[in-house]
Length: 186
Image 1: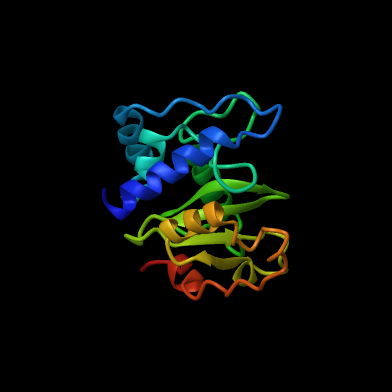
Image 2: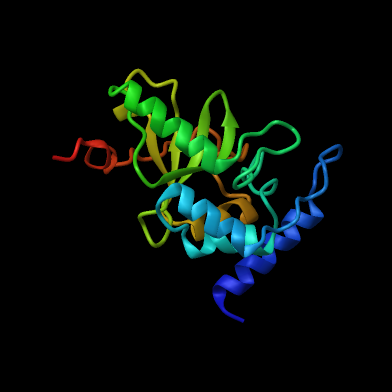
């Protein structure tokens, strides 16, 4: 079994076995056609590990805090889906050039208060970014949460994420690529 297969098995166990009381059951995995529709709507492919999470574990609802967003369709709870949220963020960024949304940065988990964990889909490892919209400037709103989606999942499974009580308040490094990824192209 490969390292990724082992990780997916751990995520599946955690997702299935640790549903908080009162939470709905874990959503079913998506069909490959849903991944194809999502990628077509986005205009870029999902990192392989992110696609595998949706294909093999469920359509969101697991992971740190509120868990992964559903991919295409909003959850029964009203939680937005990742693809429409990306489109809305990109459209809003075009209206307000002081707060651009980087191309290829897909919100995957909502932290509340407008904050998101996002995957940089242009990075093969899927760097996970933290978006904090309550900053004074967009340049100060983006942080590197984990160098890869794999690392982000391990932090959740191992209880070592910055959001854990024992680590709360840990400083995340700023995302150095924000300006280059949002600069107008000529």
